[in-house]
Image (cartoon, rainbow, N blue to C red; front, side, top):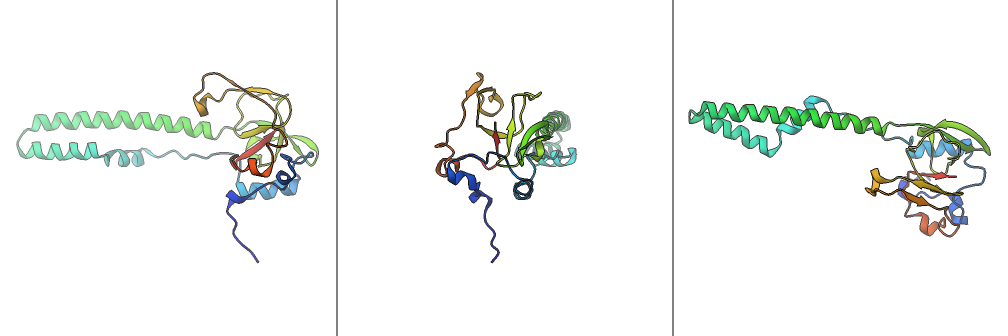
Length: 200
């Protein structure tokens, strides 16, 4: 019998044994299945067009009120005042559109960031693109040539200092310690987000 199971109920079989993941990493078959289930480790944020942003901005209640004001003042023959409101509104919308477009472009570029990662698959270390990471992957940071990692991870061995200011707003880098077998039990692992990537 085939059933649809919510992804939120997914658990790595190794977690029930008190282990974060297998000692040899994921097999190629497991990796393929999890990549199909969770998708690539990348957030693809599409940029909105200027017309879409203009439409959303024009429907803002403030600008609807401005249009109503222009119509009312025109019926009262206050053309110069109406023209002033129109010019100020156009300049305001234009600056907002440019600023919003620039911000969404930066966010879109940041969301598509990828880097090479040394991953353990089938007991063999290989260099792959970070977007192919799947939940349960073990990867090595000791010889990494990058400082930004586009995934969430648990530390299995060693220690590291992580700057999480973009996520938490904390100005001081945080020191991370390895996860213990107790913490990797099935009860506690449920609180960890599903885009989890295991780090070593």
